[in-house]
Image (cartoon, rainbow, N blue to C red; front, side, top):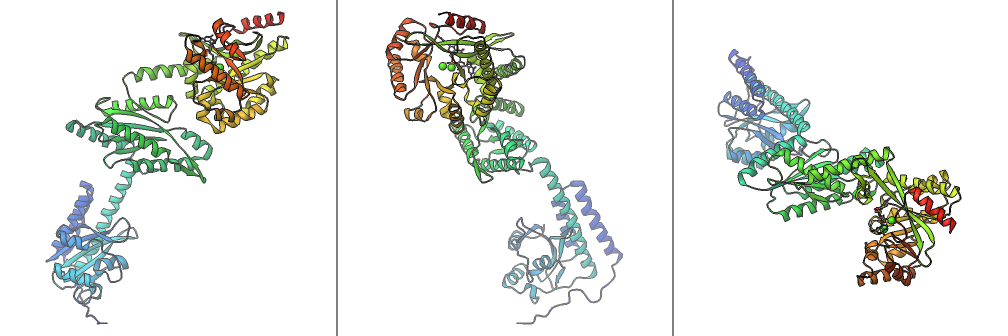
Length: 625
Ligand code: C2E
Ligand code: CA
Ligand code: CA
């Protein structure tokens, strides 16, 4: 190995500072600190630091290098007098024991005063030689920059002639590195505050504040370029359930995962933010084509549906999305937000898992639904719902077999409201759980009263929403009506709607199965309106089919309906099911159904739904017959 001749790092005759030099150092400190405080611009402070430092050493350039994001290599941060080639050659410098002046300074965390780059072992590798040759660097003094104890980079003076630093230059470099540390620490703190103020700490996405700032800019731009944009409000469905059942940690995992999925779905020009909770907002920057928006909305839906793994189980989520378009649905931030939010609300109330575009009548529509939801709540509290009972008779001889309980609501202002108008809404809001429980217990209690008076026993049919069939329903129900009321389960029939069971599957079917095993019979309501196949029917724990009213209504005018009714009867019988026809209003219908072998009839021909008092009289007549 060639023993290289090293100039001493420090000039031997260390001189005391002249007063002029001391003034220079003080002025440097004052100027740089003033720049940081007054302009709050770290870059200009670092540039000023470099300019001043190099002005105090003839034929030199000053440079500041910092670690890159991975902390693996150094990158030029400030070197206002260094040309682009030199800067690029320096970038990527890896710290090491002999990595030039700066790489070594950072590596050893000690100042490195290389006084002759030609002979110094720290510059002995080929790359450094070439660099020194190419840019005429003859000496290079470098001092580590620290934030606290942490070395983050280096400050260097590179000279175009061999030389050793004087005491003044050593102090100059140390003071410079110290100042650079202050500037960078301040910058880091500013960034931290900025991140806190403008980013969501959980997902790392921009927050509402930053989104609004960005959106305002985009709106301004779109106005000029006459571009269309789409604003999407996204709210996860049933996120609260995950939080409640699996804990907040699981909830956080879900939010992070969803944020990732969403980000990966969007283009760089789109914006996304988390507004808080499980709400996200997305701006699609190029929405000139409605089909494009639809395409992205579909992709977003699919992204949300990607399974999230929690405690080793995959969970499938869905989201409700409201969309407003710029400029059609709003030309300013506030209106766009409000309308997207409204559309999202509508998506939620229509059963979630979908996206809805804003439309002008939405506000009124949503308003009236909201009012109705409130009224349902109030009616529940004030026990304002009542029941009617509609008899079912044997088709063969007209004998009374059972009755269906139907809910009634006389609204204080709006009068009678059909269950068709409020049951679906109660299903969407979940109020059906309480409402359904009220119907069941009230109907059972009422029947128990009649039977205890000695009136004729019959099968009580109660409509059950599939939403009620959550885990634990059967147990709860049996405890209530058998345990508390002593209701005989052989007299209970639950009517469920075909299409809903097919959609729900799994858990709901298990609950139905448990009920059947306990002795409750299950009947398939509105049969023929869904799409259940024979094989699906076979798997269901049901004992009855109710032919939907729509197939009975047009007998005998519509031959197709007659064929359908006939087919349902034959098919049901082949599966061992009893068949009920509903909405039977006249003799022709009754005779046809009787001839086809239908088992039970329900409809105005037999009786309209009756109030409890009227039904009691009806029961009395049954005894008398
Ligand atoms: P559904 O279960 O199919 O109930 C039969 C509906 O047909 C009742 O309407 C009844 O009044 C009506 N109806 C009975 N006979 C005839 C007839 O001969 N001709 C005509 N045109 N109609 C007849 P309602 O009471 O308005 O109930 C509508 C729907 O609301 C029910 O349809 C059921 O799906 C739902 N519903 C009613 N009460 C409840 C309840 O307590 N819980 C649940 N979940 N849903 C209920
Ligand atoms: Ca029914
Ligand atoms: Ca029905």
